[in-house]
Image 1 (cartoon, protein in one colour):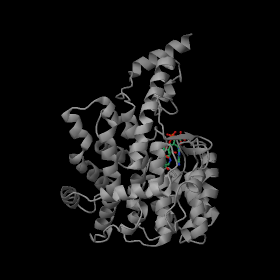
Image 2 (tube, protein in one colour):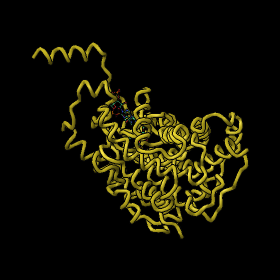
Image 3 (cartoon, helix red, strand yellow):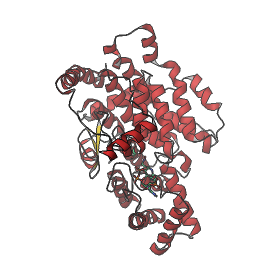
Image 4 (cartoon, helix red, strand yellow):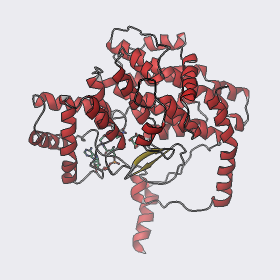
Length: 437
Ligand code: NMX
Ligand code: MLT
């Protein structure tokens, strides 16, 4: 058995006891109040879920099991010759809470390689979809098509104790993560490169293989893929993709159903699709203003974007109230590898101009850039110019986090999600009663 699975198993018992004790001793403690604005306004900020693997502080940004992105960059193992941590390491860390050794990570790489072959039925399904179907639709469909082979669904049908749910869930998650890079690569190569298939290279780690299978063997791009697939992996529970995965999984739908649903949420322009929107918008800026614009030109262009009723893509956040540390990590990568690239100069200039405009407009609660404001320019620089594809990379990464939590959610026997909705009249009566007091 993989050391990772053994380590996970050893943590399940103590964690179950901890949760049971919490509910027994503190189950009646009130943790939040809810206002009508929150009910109407997307449940913003209501504390009503628990998530074990990451936590988002509005000022500081994401911490994965207590560690910031720079902490992870310093602590997690890297591939030989690489300078960014490998996603295998972050998966191990999220699942167990322990920093893996390089050997632990190699064992995960090997395990994923062993499980990576795509079944014929999946390849046939993928090839039956028109290649110009949006890559996120193809991605979600492919994940769903794999559901046929779910070990969790088969074991559930045969009959299984609740305390055993995590085991086939773990097996399904390992199968999915093993297959995602090739699924993504097949979509990319079919949509943009005439369907040529590049087989994975057994010498490469998971992220480098993602780069290799889309035809890019630049070692710097391998490192970008490692960074990209680590920093997008999780953002606590309330974002649309994580919450969807958790919600669907809570009905004991297996990992394939849960992840496919999550990817449909990630495909929305206010969520993950914002990364393609940013690049599309920057291309428009550079086309309309004939190259790198002046800050004055940018100022006007940004205002025109807002006045036309559009959002400034890549700016703002539902929780964050400062520059996203994932933006900072990508900016540092750009400063190291592509400081003089025209499009990076535009991205940097937007960073100087956009927050002031959003503050001036006075609507957005957070005028600072999020992760999506920077990811596209890096991919574009390394030749991945087909920006409709960018959200698929986000999805490959996001699977690492939300599926780690899904295993934990089944291990801890978390309940089916079923909050209470209320009629608008009920809210109106509440509001009137409060006013009358
Ligand atoms: N450009 C223009 N207006 C904005 C922006 C922006 N970047 N961000 C927020 N606003 C507006 C927002 O549309 C809302 O307007 P209205 O009152 O007319 O409905 C108002 O400001 C208040 O919104 P907030 O409470 O600040 O933001 P909210 O929590 O509702 O939404 C986002 C968060 C991320 C959806 C929003 O900031 C946005 O639409 N950003 C642009 C899209 C984007 O970058 N999404 C990616 C987020 C990260 N991810 O990967 O998921
Ligand atoms: C994410 O990574 O999921 C986004 O930043 C959106 C969010 O956290 O709400």
